Amino acid sequence: MQFFQALILVLGLAAGDLVYLCLAIAGLTALALVMGDFFLFVRLVCATYLCYLGWKILKQAGKAKGTSSHGKRKTTYLTSFALGFGVSLGNPKAILFYVSLMPTFVDVRTLTLLDTAVLSAIVLGVSLIVLGGYAVLAIRVARFAVRRGADKRIDQLVGAALIGAGVFVAARSQS
Image (tube, rainbow, N blue to C red):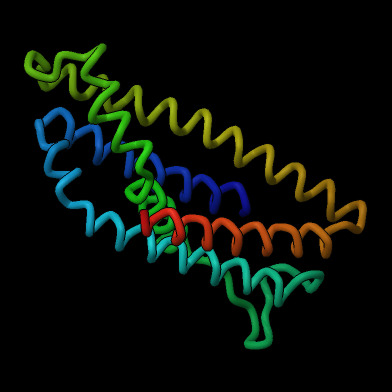
């Protein structure tokens, strides 16, 4: 079940990359840069959500997974997808890649519909392979840690890391 949840998050990340790819192909990357306030908002929402997830993990550190004081509660696939999508859309490196680097090896003026489909498949495939690999590795490490009884400490580290990442994302958004 953890793998499918992670895969949905990875699909959200890849979908965000596909949005940037389509904007670059359509020549709308300048629009993406102009919409800086929207992307600032997306980053701040994602930062807040990261902090919330970190707080939730810290609060539940060492307790049975998938439960809370209100009974069983699991993250939905839609929430995982939306988080991945939002993180990807709020990533300034993705904007820079599609605005500046991609045009150096792809002439978007001459792309056909088939070329666009092939590029989209490549972006999706690379994202799924790389990020999916990270997800599998993270799940294996988590399972190993649970067997060793280190899950409470790992939950505390992950919770703190998520809160730290949320604060970092929010602070970077101000510049």
